[in-house]
Length: 427
Ligand code: PMP
Image (cartoon, rainbow, N blue to C red):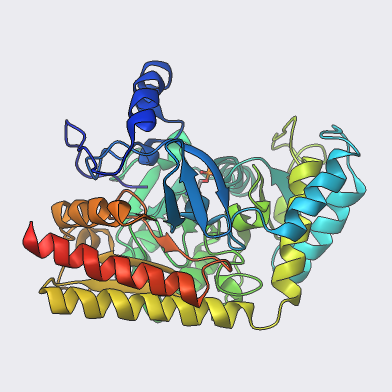
């Protein structure tokens, strides 16, 4: 969720966006920056965002009737695309039974079983309503469990907007370290050995653009946290169920103490969950002293959507292989078209999520990500939206594919990329 530069004026698109323009003025008067979440504003790419009225499958539609292929997919939440039939049916069925109970429901028990089966390190879990709530609560729980205060996080990773996690450089009880630097981590962790409550990490980072962990980095986190008695938290809010049924922890065979899931596990609804070792989770109220609660926690509509989504992900043979194939195809197209247009580009990818960085050097941490040319990305963004493709309006985010992005959609994206790069050369 990093943003780097904020042009003061908005560009005008040649697409007809008269209704969006008018509504954008209202939005700015009513909502700070015109948005309910900052990255949506388009200020990084210098463009007024289209105002959205509906979505279906791989597409999203604005108020002027323009259709876009959606590569944002609710920031990774919609792995089945917009309005997948089975999820919509489950939600409709649940609506007939109630929208909120304020008590434990059969659905929550069923979902907890399903999640533990997919992510066995989550022996016990607590359902909440947003990713921020999950990470914030996991941190508080880790502090309560260890009776220590300090947290280590990695620069460029995003874990929600709780005060204690938003500081970029180290300050007070938060220590910020470079991603992928195992030696530095070990040195700092050992120096603060008796003070560190938790180490929180995106096991594949997606909030500085996609950055993959170097071999040994995650293993080192596990080893050292065990040595110093700190809680290891994997923030799998983006990666959970994105790359396989389960998480990165399954892929790498590493068992964190706590895990946060959100986005995909919510089936497109406000839902997240954190969980892990039973002895840690049992420190939560009402059986332990760490208080954490929520009026809409485990909301039955969201839980019904979650169950329906996980059902598809678990049972649909070849789904993740298909997503991998389409992700690889999109990476190849970006690399080929950038090369023929004469742009240096590095595409970092994990399965169906990827980031094209306009740079010629490898991107392995926040400093190297920041070398990506923001102005070039902004031109690329503007050309792509003109071509009817909605990519994230920031160079430090990920493009996400869904099941609805089939071969023909990838083909259309490919043509738009070729045209956009051509346009960038001419402008
Ligand atoms: N952790 C990660 C890895 C995220 O990507 C996000 C959101 N992009 C969050 C936490 C916060 O989640 P939410 O926006 O639902 O509060």
